[in-house]
Length: 173
Image 1: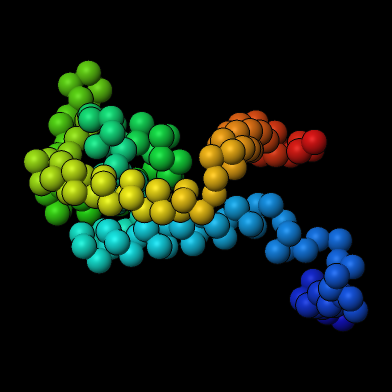
Image 2: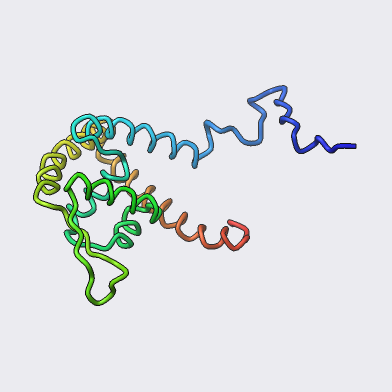
């Protein structure tokens, strides 16, 4: 006898409005949808003009902001996994947008910085990105902007606190 219970599809609720969890009202889902749409809209600009994706954009902007950093520091700042950072850096290096300099104190890591061509792209992209952000922010008034900033800060801080607790199997409350 085979147990098929693990393969059964969930039975839809007779009344979706009575569901205990409604995806379209679930905050993590709503934040993800918003971030995904914003990222997709912005990425169309730099993908079409510069043929780079989201990870390359994040590396480029992080190095443009901070100058010289290790890949590990870029990953920590941009919240990207080391594999994504490594692939993005490799692509940017092939395109001669990022330069690598060995760390003589630790030969396992290198210092990354924008090449002159990378700096040119960063300089071109910066006002475009700022204008894009302004177009988004123009949809909300100044009080809402301040509230949004505070709410995002609180949600970010709380999420950072929950990550290690949940990873250890703890109760998120």
